Image 1: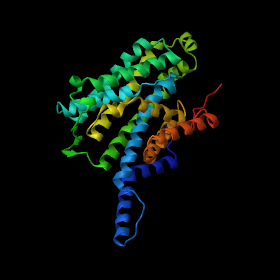
Image 2: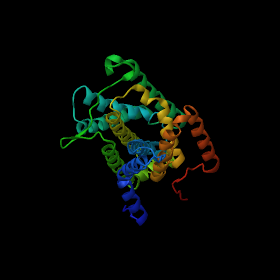
Image 3: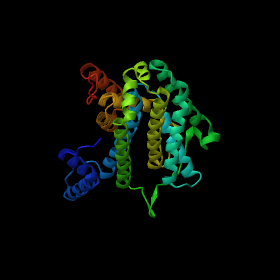
Length: 327
């Protein structure tokens, strides 16, 4: 399926690519005003880029999670488990064995896909609440192992330190503007892959499973094959996000992969619209950046998230950009 590039999309893409230049230009403006004893309430360019990097990372994770509940209709409460697998696979390979990030990231993706298949194998016949409970238990199991088994990770509470920055052509990618383009490229590749899958024979099979498993199976759709593929692709994308997160943070711990992260990512696709690629991106952009903006409120920001979702369920139960359903 061909994608039509409208003028708006082209302009948006250009703006996104030029954002680092705009943020650092704001720094120059603040410096110019400061020299003249004028105070401008503009955050630093690196701070704004860090928020954007986090928002793009959440967009990538939301796209990966959306494959299971959005495309196949199965509620996944344990997506953070694959995020964890990717983060610790890449982090340990880089920090302990000195492997290159460009080797560790693909390995993390493959490892995530394998764990996705392992988790999916005993749940292929489960639906609804039963499937959700199993996914929750899976992520909690991984979280507890990483947090408590010091012999496995090498540090208390899952601490992995001194994860080196990626090296590209002899240059370390540790500046925020470099990380910005790094995650932007990963996000674009993820959008392309998910879009191609959604509008392929595989995507149509997933949609049939989402609408009615029995009817899909009666029409010759192999539930085991297509569900397993959904689990593997979704998990691999989550693991890629974890690998990026590990090198971006430099130091990671189990606390970064708590159950709340799964709920937050799920809220993003619910807010944007289940099954919608653009909806996942919009939902992640809103909640991903809102979390940072509301950080001064501490734990109260979770209450604000809850109020937003309640209002969404009341006025837009299908999400901001829900997929169109025919028939």
